Image (cartoon, rainbow, N blue to C red; front, side):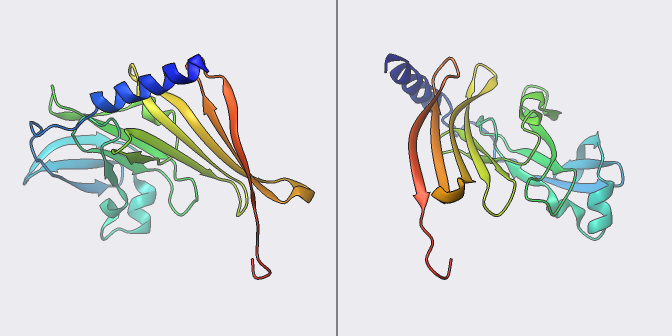
Length: 195
């Protein structure tokens, strides 16, 4: 129980520390994709060229392949970051994350976020990142992470699965500071005759 409260307090301190301030300039970026990279524009000028595999995006939509780039603030520093997908039309979209480095004024590839391997959802209100893995129409897993000293720490996971005769279940787990998993609750999905 003591470990749970320590983890809770760390999460509260993390939430306080990630407040977005008004000091961040309201700067917007646009992108243009070519067959082996992305140009990042600030206004009409190229800020940076990132060489990466974009051939698949270009083939799918040569008119506006940049529409597949996802922009969000994954490290909750008040600056937009972006994600370039490597493959489209899959439930778990693989790709690469680029985080804005305000000291140098450029985007840098994020090794930490790239360990996630797929597109995640940044939740600025809770300063958490949700990674959803969909394996089938029944099985999926939602893992919630928070930043902890430059790395991502798993704090919660919900797993939906087919338990055979017991039906479809959702198990929710929490994690303490040592990464030890505890089952918080188990729910059974009850389907109507129409599913």
